[in-house]
Image (cartoon, rainbow, N blue to C red; front, side, top):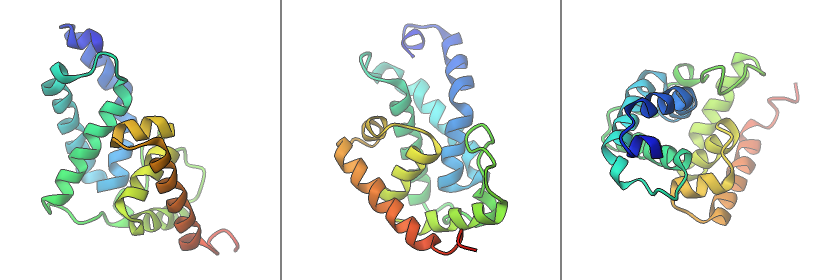
Length: 169
């Protein structure tokens, strides 16, 4: 990112190639696949427009996830889309979410995620599906690390309740 801030246009392409799939997967879990591609583009456009405000001592990944989260929130707030239909957002790119469970279970997990409060859902999606550390999530959401841990813990507990019996077949 520092190379891009300093005027290296090729650095943006490298950032896009590196983060396109993970950010798309993240957005697909929040707003659905149909909208995720558009919001991915919006997010990277915001990176371009905001490059002068990038903290040279900061980390790019949490900053990018903050931008993507805000793009998703803005989109949902404007009412352009309801929370996604389960089938539409059930999976993310394979590089982000390996196919370790069957599609029916994945849909059940997605439905359960959509029933969580936004603050818990964001913490879980970033942690479990995007492999961000609690410190990175805290930075992306402008929270303390302990607040993120509490949100994730409560979200995981609620998910366990919502999914109870699914794996006890």
